[in-house]
Length: 307
Ligand SMILES: [Zn+2]
Ligand SMILES: [Zn+2]
Image 1 (cartoon, rainbow, N blue to C red):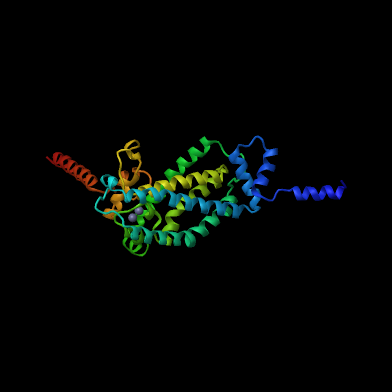
Image 2 (cartoon, rainbow, N blue to C red; image 1 turned 30 degrees about the horizontal axis):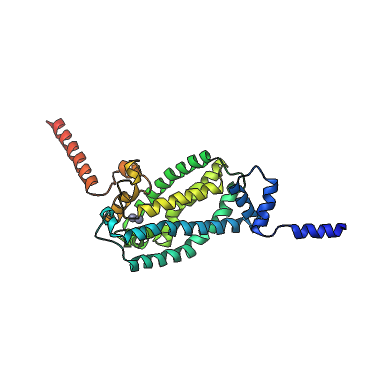
């Protein structure tokens, strides 16, 4: 075989399919696990990191959003579960859910897609890593825990601000169209709200990357997945004896957010109960009763002092 033949055969042998790249990459990277090889092959195959992250992020968001909403749609159609529905007289109809789906999809393609696309270049400029090997799971776990706390704080204050008259009427009212929420309605909101509240989920990790230089895009994917589960489940409208807040009393869950939709006031936080507790903005009859008791105790104390 001549040298030129050899060169040609080398060119021909260069893998151009995804699994071709995967096999080639696997030969020289035995230290990587299968997920890391699949991951690295995807970026090598796409030849453009922004497009590679963009497609993967958008698809992941759609699959998790609708995939997580689906069980709630099914549960709504099974009468057995009605006893667990918080506002049991208000089961969303199929027409309502379909109308909501259409608006959510429109918002995903027009508002969220550009944001998802911008995420990679912004985060990369701030020091985000997209390579392999992946970070250790404990690193991802503590970072995600911090994101949950920071996002919840951002969400509490921004959401509370959105209940101020002019902002409520011009922005937040759309999200409150459903006084008895359901999973699909989690992202049913004005584009401005999607951007402002979404910033808590997207900008917090970017700032984290900027300051620590220790942030991997995989951590972002897992964080987004958890955050979507949290948001969809909080809108599900169902409270079970096995709901998470029974085991983690500071976890908000559906019981917390459903009251917010029903009463339009109080319970502004997303994941945890501590901000509403600290700022005395807890919603619902039990919270009102506790507030009244506190006020009465205070007055009694004052009266005793005055005697
Ligand atoms: Zn609200
Ligand atoms: Zn809501």
